[in-house]
Length: 130
Image (spheres, rainbow, N blue to C red):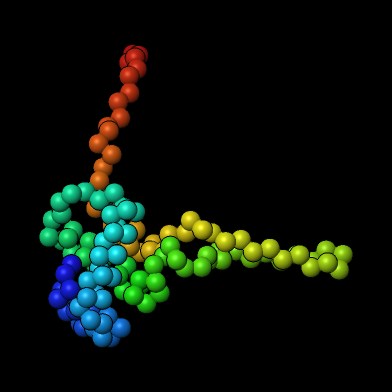
């Protein structure tokens, strides 16, 4: 997705946070988003037109999030669960952070059909008994 396409996409959906930015800023965020996709998803090399649209939406979604919230690697850990117990008058509280949480589960789901296949088929050898 290029800057002009991203402006049209954002304008159609009312994302003023995006449309108020300069072209240089948008290009930077789109590049960061593409880098994130390239690093985290093993996508095939060529897409059909419909697949390219999905890839563009994924790129825009990540770029908009980076614009609004910063890069996922620089964000504070998200709390996954919190546990509290009270035993004999003592209150014990534990907080667990999930550092490996997927910051873009909707993008992951969107891009799953575009993933490169492993290329290794499975073969099993055995005896046919009648």
